[in-house]
Image 1 (spheres, one colour):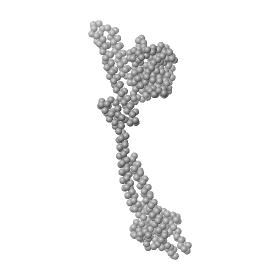
Image 2 (cartoon, rainbow, N blue to C red; image 1 turned 135 degrees about the vertical axis):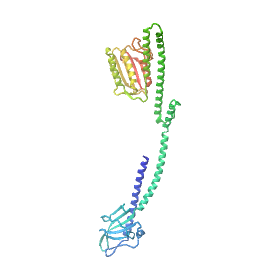
Image 3 (cartoon, rainbow, N blue to C red; image 1 turned 90 degrees about the vertical axis):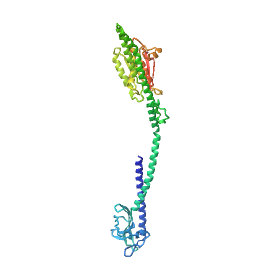
Image 4 (cartoon, one colour; image 1 turned 180 degrees about the horizontal axis):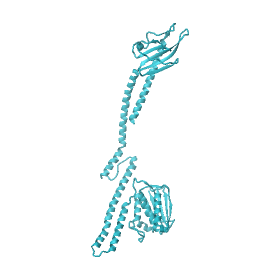
Length: 430
């Protein structure tokens, strides 16, 4: 772009200079015509007489490059300067009296100025003449060539200087990006744990998001390792009991089935724990209302015998940034628990939190069941704890919900519903 700009500037300046030079030449030739008019005289025979010598000596030098010729209006020759002898000079077209005609004959490399004049002698006789002054265009060409060389030198030097400055500015401006790239390489090599450089304000958001992404991925990796370790440790006891049953003479089938069920619960628990993803820094947005509609539709079929009345106060088109599976996990567990414990009513409400700097959306889930005592709410958020041991389940659903919401940067609060009298869950989304 810089090179194109200077090329256009050079073209425009050269054209402007050439037009200025041609205008100056026209004015010069016009002065020469006035000088010829001042020395021309008409005799009694109506013949135009010109002196032998002129103020401009080039008119007297053959092939000097400056020529003069006088013709009648019918283009017949009246007089020509000594410099024009043997030179074929251009003939002007029909020209009104008192008008100038300036032309550039490119084929002959000449500029010509013609002037039509009506000459009247003392006796009142008139004759129309055309005074023409012609000059070679080499002088203009040399001027333009010198100007072009000077212009090319200055613009070339300025362009090189500006490109050098631009390169330096770009290199200086992109230095923080190179620093981030270097820091990421060191993080990948294990030298650093996070981006801790002094970055400009424009990159603070990028560095913060990258640090959050790195921390999130490390936290997930750590949880995967811990989950595998927990799975291996949890399976030791059931496996040891099964080994003992296998080595005994009489196999206790009841004990074997209990341990198999226990191992199944452990595997399901650890898989569900490992599947908890939490917030992703670059996750897409999902429409939470549509997901809740799908969950309610499924629960109406599962608990068709209870004929549950679902009330859903939805915000149309409300989207949040998270994984779709996390919303299914959170809303699905909470609504499934409400469906288990309710009598016949469940209310779901979505509210936007305008004045909250940390949270943007509130999801309220209420039922008309017996509810949970306030001192037991914290207990059921622990893994393996169930509100009622007689209800089928593994006791990990609410723990996974709580962990997911915390990973997303949200908050889960439980209390008694004033509206329906049962349990009420407040789910704050970031």
